[in-house]
Amino acid sequence: MSNINEFQMENNSELLLKFGSLIKESDINFQIPDELMLCFIYARKRDVQRAMKLLKNYLRVMKNYPELFTDLRSERVKHVLDLGHLLASPIRDQNGSRVFIINARNWDIRRCSLEDVYSAVVFCFQMMVSEMETQSKGVVGIVDFQDFALHQIRHFTPSFLKKVADLIQDVFPIRLKGIHIVNEPRIIKILVAMIWPFLSNKIRNRLFFHGSCFATLHHHVDPSCLPSNYDGCLGPMSSMHFSSVFFEEDYYSNIFECLN
Image (cartoon, rainbow, N blue to C red; front, side):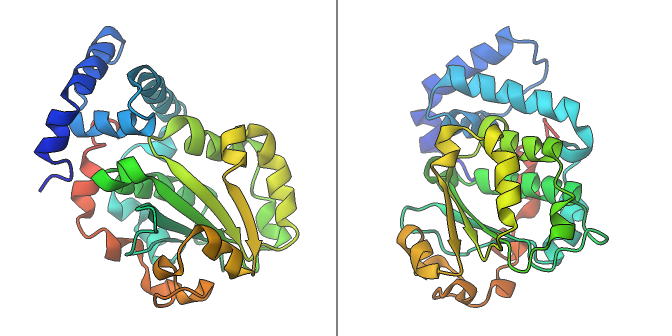
């Protein structure tokens, strides 16, 4: 069953034709399905020229870092998901955005490398943006740095942080409505200082630091869609396994198959 209904296809037929023409005029020599074209179109607010630039950026980064982007399947990222590092709320926020949680608690690089996490985030982004509602309403991200230590921070090189910045603002067809940092120790200032030069003003203005004061988080994200870990109305974060929200993993990832 498609996540993109016939009405949406008809309603965007002119945009799809324009975007398809730009693709044909480019050096992209493979077929891109309408569902995937809409992901890029919506990510750039229906501006096909900007959507085309975003698509080219995505393909460029895929070519430069094939180990991070290619052959993304649920079995490849399963160990990251099973460790509970990437989670999704079953309830959307008050604006209809999907709530995505990156849980850095108990992160052990011996079991899960930064590259593993990056690829798993791309996989999760692919599934989330395959939802029609998420294309238009976007994603709210929460990053939990509880008990994060200096020995973990040293693995975040400037080059890796540049890849992270590129992914969220210039590469992936997703609309990030906000990034909320919670339970962050003081040493997170080191990471922020390293990634800050790579961030656009738009992303900087959507970055919020809450510490352990979840009341301020609730000003942005309604408690009805948050786990009890953040004084929300839902069960504990451990019950929000990403795959429990996205049952049809193979469907959600397959519209990106022509790129993967």
